[in-house]
Length: 580
Image (cartoon, rainbow, N blue to C red):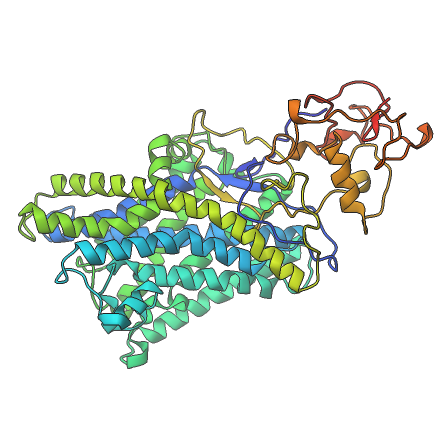
């Protein structure tokens, strides 16, 4: 019996189920499915991005931006949007590229899209409906039925005269939704040919470099345009692709280092996280003081202003993310700070903060009696933050979390339906024993750098589409010392039967739907025939290699589970048929 695997990768390897898994294509040989990876610092990054957006939207109506010496720094809080885009580029693309590097199928698009829909749309619709009913029309409104359609389906940013209606900050969601739709298509294009991991990394980075430069060229060309159909160019995904591409490049490098079981040398140096944030702070200072950007949040930029803004905001977000992607998360000052309870809590509700803060600002301005441009900034900011966090917390528990839980089952059903339509598997094929909950795939590991007592609500980047419909292990890959059995018709049923009778991979132990402890039936005596298990001679009984054998159970992370849910110890004659 072996202890937990401790990879030297850039994040936490976990057995927590994530999203939903793709159903394998039997026509493609399967590699080793990469482990699910948890990045504890990403909730902290979300919290920072959301608070930056709140700062820029409160400082301007208070008059602080234009009257204070710190105004240029609060005005550049709009860089929080760029941080959100880099986070999306990293977390959404990493599962796809990890699957490509491992040579296994990535997620089916229907399940992925179901999860994305349930993640952002229900809460957005609630926030939009509430805002339109509680905020006066002179502050926020929609342009009739057409305006409701435009704002409800993320179209309001594509024309200038549509933009200022509903939740005015939601134009960024237009870009996010476009990116959600583009990710599986982009991954499919780069995964059409099977390549070695080294070749795939080269192709990935080259494609990102080309698309990054293409986005810059498109951005440069559309800025001065006055064509009516191009009036909403600022909400086009190609214009913002450069920021997503920077996060995707981090995803490619992170997935490759994780596959190799190591991390960049610089990430292990003392103070590496602090150095990254010092560079990010320097870039923020340049953007605030030396980039020539206006202090007002809405302006018509010229080419130099907007190109500089994208470049500086992208670099700021890039260096802000680096410590959360690479390095031990319990070392230094920056990484534990990102994983701390306060930032983890704010990051978990960051989407609600982003959606509700403008509504709270409008209501405070409407009912406080404060005069626009002459508002004491510190109490104004404190009131807005407290009220926004309260509303975001409530809607997180009442709307976001239930919708996310629902999305897991719906995504699995969508993936299974697509697989059946394509003739890949029959209904229920390959379902893990019990079928009660998502079962993890890949190695189980413990990250040595998790902050003790840290909040469990962390960003997860697993192979997209994890579900109970996972391929069951067969033959020697399925159990230590087991007999070779070709994976074919009946293999999955045989494995499921063996699991139900007392043998399960260690990766499934303790998971929902897998019997353990008192609820696990005792394995039948092999000397007694049963209707579903004919007796077999002793020479055919598989032997269990010793734990010190080079081919022992530690290599594939499996162990025998005896009656009562405890690992069996000692003896070379152990097998799924019973104890010797």
